[in-house]
Length: 595
Ligand code: ARG
Image (cartoon, rainbow, N blue to C red; front, side, top):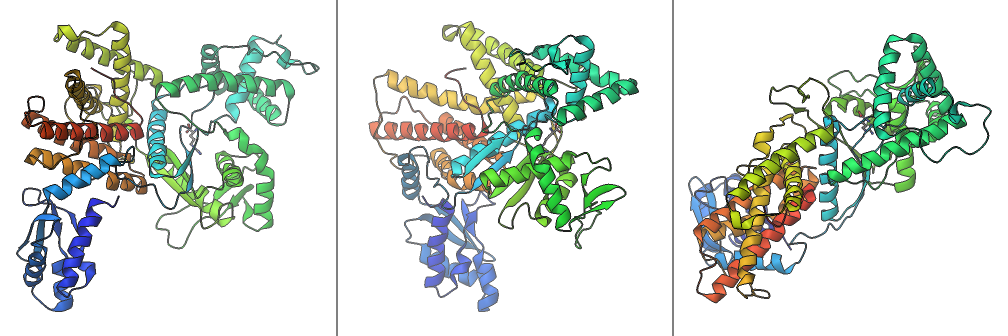
């Protein structure tokens, strides 16, 4: 379906042309004076210059042409030359009915130019628990992926595990100190290694920080860890077997954590998967004359003439020949291009890494790892702060584990639900349903609290505000959906059925307002994808939920005596529910049956 603004623009464009003015002046936008009109066109002001006519004269003429239009119920010219318009009720109702007939898409056509987009998000590090710093990448990345998919692109999510480097050597070293008898440390061992890991996830999570702490104090320990890392990376069998265990135990735990967040990845690749591509890549960069040695290190210049600030060279190899975070990201681009030929790669990473990604992207482009037709996009997100405005911490001041954060919001939600239940005895839900519902609402609270902010901005994680059933929150949106579900159940409970009925016109100002909100759906989805901006979907459903709730307060739905009108209301409710559900699905959460 065409977007409402396109349809209105076509109509106004025609009126301009019929009055002898260029079509380009007929662009219609949403009104910035909703008290006066729903839509506006400012074209007469610009046309006035070209035609050397007073703008109001042009606006008057166009308004007159629009007078009999079936599209507008009002089109008036106002000084100095604006066109203020209201859409015709029957026209709007027909549009909304068209959305309903377009099941699952609600008027949002799939893109005619589907792209393959690889999206790098999550970025957890093996053997370290997920902490709040990983939350935003997971939430935003998942939503961008789902929005892209809805719009019709092929979206491939890659978790890009941090599974390479010193942390592995540290774990191996600590393990060797604790259990030297393990077969992994016997260099003469040639048999198969045990299938079972010699540690659990909780042990692993304790081993790593212990080792990391020791290495900071003990130079010999650190040396040993570096040596172990080196041997691991150069193929020592026992260490590689340990690496597989570390990966397996860690990834199993990560998957469980991401599942709880309703986040999933198509690819579970890691930094280690890029290593085989490094030697050839580096060789080629040297041969092509891009990489040169500077102060011992191998670098590629990436500064550009138009730079307003200094962009240092991209370092490819350290002076000791070791690869870096950069090297891995560049080599990752190599396999991504080889295996998936993406039209675009989006990186959902903390915005403090922006300069780093500028270097990596420029280097990739300059050295030909990606062609001009592949877009590299950095979607940098801001920091999640505590109520004190500082990065979110535990009460003791440590880094907050993601799991604990989620659990605390779950608990808060459960408390609220239980209190709610007490006030409506006959609706009492069982303990299991209460737990499950609490988790669903908590997830909505967390995700909406995050996604409703523009990604690049810092925001304050405020549990009290996020879990509130009122205001611009996830629970408010869910509450609205549940309210609609309950009305529909009541209606059906009376043995009534509105299926097949059509949305028959507009019956009140608040219903019109709801339909106006509904009609924006396709434009919002497209725009949210174009601008990689899930917050636009949030803003949309907040407006939609508000419009619905006003309609609900104004309208006696269940007691409506005119059957056609009642059915029409029910159909509007069904559409509102479907659109809201589709939107929260792309945001990565869902609504319970009741709450
Ligand atoms: N593992 C990294 C971290 O915890 C994030 C990885 C981001 N993605 C990337 N392609 N570099 O900071």
